[in-house]
Image 1 (cartoon, rainbow, N blue to C red):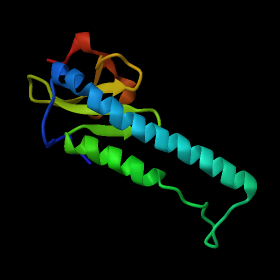
Image 2: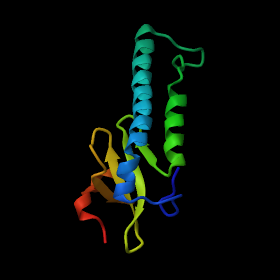
Image 3: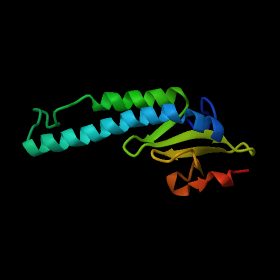
Length: 131
């Protein structure tokens, strides 16, 4: 997991936008795995399929999500919510304060940012970048 106080790298809006093809591919894999897991779990539950330890019959979805997270983490990008495709890129304001450039799957570009402590609820448009 990326430490916002000491990220492996920081991103500009232009760099984050340029990375979106790679990000979209990793997010698509993670979202497909999450959806596949939900479908499989719902089917297994409806059919009453259980292992002797009480857990649903397993699939490879977790491995795929972990791989997508690792791919992005290796680039210094944080996949916050694999099911929704919520991604944060570490950035640093001119004042030195860390913040996140925020992208949600389906958005055409990185158009939002938020302070580390504010989270998604504090998203602000990119045209109002921090000083």
